[in-house]
Length: 503
Image (cartoon, rainbow, N blue to C red; front, side):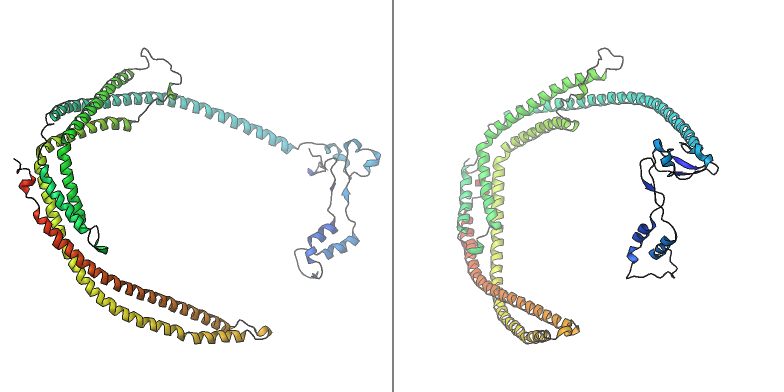
């Protein structure tokens, strides 16, 4: 708390120092002002004739001689304030103001405190009224939201019951279809013996062609279209043989898959029936229904194992699996009737495809051989021109040595200029730039020379490669045109591949 001293008539007050705390009524002029303007001390002399917004320390040093410096106020102690030995140190006050010496508040403070209390009361009452109105609104909102939430939940359960009925009917329909298909596939298990012996001849021809093509050389030993078609022909023959050998086993396996799908459908139908009864019972509950009770913590128990998407996908997958198995079973029954004709058609179609590939490959090889001969001629001409270009590059590099020596000699001579004459003048910049440009030019020419030498080496290697490739192409033409196409003329007819020969 502060003590106030002043005159009551003029209502002038000022804060006196607290008891026990030392202070000064006026700052010491010399120390303060000198510290403020010490940066302008000699040797920087400031003239008093300048019209400045401040006064230099010279002004205060002159004033110190004409007026006394105020001293710090003594410390005041209330217990000894009116003692004889202390009264002489108390600042002079007006006698009529003695009663206001220990006043704590002013009338302004009193009015301000009252107004603050009034405003606080108004704010508190307004806040309480807003809270009451908000509470009433929240009660109405929560009641309406509770009713709406229960209605939405009941509607959701009703939709769920409709979904269960839909999928249950789909499952029952698929169960009937699967039962009929199981009976049909059981009648087709024994119709599977045909022309297995006739497939051995085409298989040997295809394998002999693959063996002969292994005699190709170098780059022509490529996995080209002919190679792929021959391998595909072998695969088709093996697949035909496997189909004839394993058709009965596939029928038995398909029958097992059909029965497994039927079991999953029956299990899913049973689960749908139980879920329908539970959800139907839940849908009939209401606020006044019998049997409702509190089940504390049940909302925190989550024993679900699926989502609506995964639930529908599970049943859909079961139906799709059953449909897929039925389609496979239908395809297998049709395959049992058409295996012999399909085998003949597939093998003969592939035989024609291989022959077309051979013809195309032979034509490509002949074109490549002619192109190699043409390229070899052009490569020999390019080798001669590249050798001349290398000679030109080497001469150009040699011609840059003299200008470089001149520029560097000039720079070296200019380093011997005396004292301040060692100036980074315009000639110095020009010489440094000239040396840099010459170095850069020589580097570019040397890089081009190395590139040209590499290109010459590549041309020489290309020449050797083309000569070797020419001999390789001649060998490939002999293998494909003479040996492979010759043996393929013994391929069996379509009637024999269809199995008519053994009947």
